Length: 115
Image 1 (tube, rainbow, N blue to C red):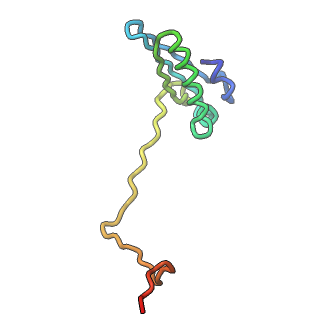
Image 2 (cartoon, rainbow, N blue to C red; image 1 turned 45 degrees about the vertical axis):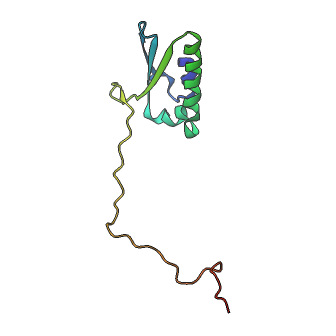
Image 3 (tube, rainbow, N blue to C red; image 1 turned 180 degrees about the vertical axis):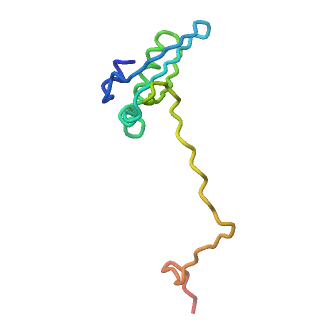
């Protein structure tokens, strides 16, 4: 994991990797923690980088006959790790009465009256 993620980090020493393996279910959970400022570099444009890292992990796990799960955490300044949860956005306010926009001029594609 370090080999895959460290090149994207500005502070590679902040990377924390935690693995948990379940032999009975043949699953491995990998948890990464790094500085919040490096999140954009690790995720990449449109999430492509993190998707590629997940594909590599899945291919390795599949070759070993297992499944793998990757969780990403932010590494806050106090040293404790917490899940990377984005705050929920409030729902946009909508008025109860809706008005429909009607053009004031006729369209050039409107049907011409017959003579």
